[in-house]
Image (cartoon, rainbow, N blue to C red; front, side):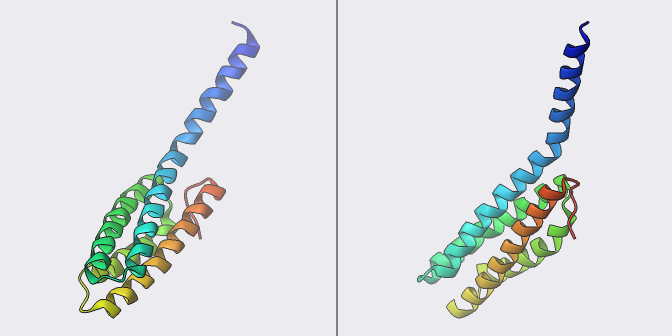
Length: 130
């Protein structure tokens, strides 16, 4: 075979193989972004039922993010995910509207932290962040 062809084929195969872990981190980032969107809606909701509904949707997204982050290996995001899930569980069934907003705001802060850690993982390329 032609050596140039083998070189090009080797480079293409290595690029495809190296991009596979980033795909699961990209999926985790997408899921976390979806969770952030619903967390913001829960925080901005003027209706108590809407607040609980969006908190539940955000909780589902962060639980999905947790499994996807486990697959991609970005360990730096796990603490923020766990705290975000805890806050959303409280926001999903709060004592009153103010407590729902409080826990939604805390979950929103943790979700931003998740996204920052996933950014660091994608920049580092090794799947771990500080």
